[in-house]
Length: 494
Ligand code: ADP
Image (cartoon, rainbow, N blue to C red):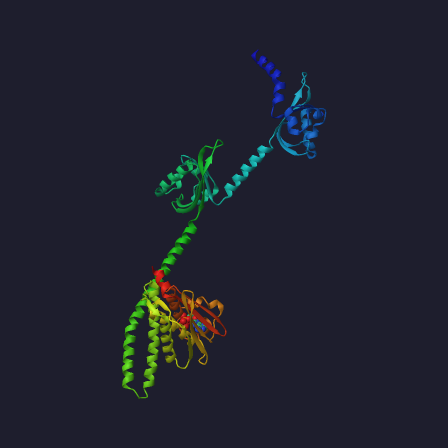
């Protein structure tokens, strides 16, 4: 009795249900002629009921799917329910729409099939979402990085293939476990801080840390952790992308180790240089003194020539040892300067004059300043610079050519210029010749040397706040160096 009443009620309500349904509800006869077309069908297919009713259902069926429709009609006629399937339909504007269709036969009171009712649901948006989801899942799955999500209690919710490879746990082993599964005990505090940041809605960017694999292997990772929100914006967990940087860290550690080793070897070399030059100084001084005595004793003898030659070689050796000693002191930062106010005019004249008499065969001319200028400098060290430049000018130019040394004021500095007519330098050598032990290859076989003189000179000039440089071509080289005038140098001290 109750059942009959319910049925009657449902029957009464049926038109209202059809009217308000979000699904298109269409009826057609056994020939496929549309007999009913609800408002949802109007909206979905853009035909009004008036336009649709009386037309063949082919109105909304793409031509390539007409065979499918013929088979459906065949089933309906035989009283079978074609049931549920997904297919494509046309809108009035001929745009395609993906639909889910449910068709059942309609029978009259005598149980004779008179048509079919069709319920159609638009699933195009739904499929888009599904496709996006599938695409995202494929990206996550194929990533080499570990992509893991966890809830706010630290329980692992998802675990991709990258995570399986890096941490050696497969998804079934990891999901449901606490994230501490891969965190070394000493890093647990770090995890607590991360969770706290996530709860505040903050993202944790590229921290480099260590995790543990299933086999207990430490893995260096770079991790980015972002909060996950539900649809209402509430933070419900965190997603973590971890990149294995073990190899990068290994290379960095190896590089650091090699750099340290190199530094150590360099220090040994500097120590050795300092020790050797220091230890050589005493015997050389003794040899020099003895040769001087010998020279006096054999004055006038044929043997004097040999002693003079030996003395000149000892002088060279002494020079080299002093240079090596300076280099090692420069390397250690312990080269001392005894600066004082110096009349540069007089100083330059005296220095050049002693050169002119020592190398009387060479034409060395000085173009000095008219007036006195004062610098604040270590006299012996500046003499060493001028001596290096003049010695090079003599060494790297033919004996019959001229050498000029001149001096001029340039702002608050005094500029000294040494010019020769020698072998010259290629532009790519202009900077390099001031490096330690650097010698120009093409001339190194012809001219002996150590590649130290210009390095020491440039360091001396730099430590007087000056500048040293060269200009050169095939007609010869011009070396320049500047030194601040005493007033400026002293003002800079204060
Ligand atoms: P050394 O002369 O003992 O090799 P330096 O440090 O004094 O060392 O000079 C470095 C290099 O610069 C020299 O080997 C030489 O090739 C180049 N050089 C220096 N002075 C001159 C110059 N006046 N003319 C041409 N080349 C020069």
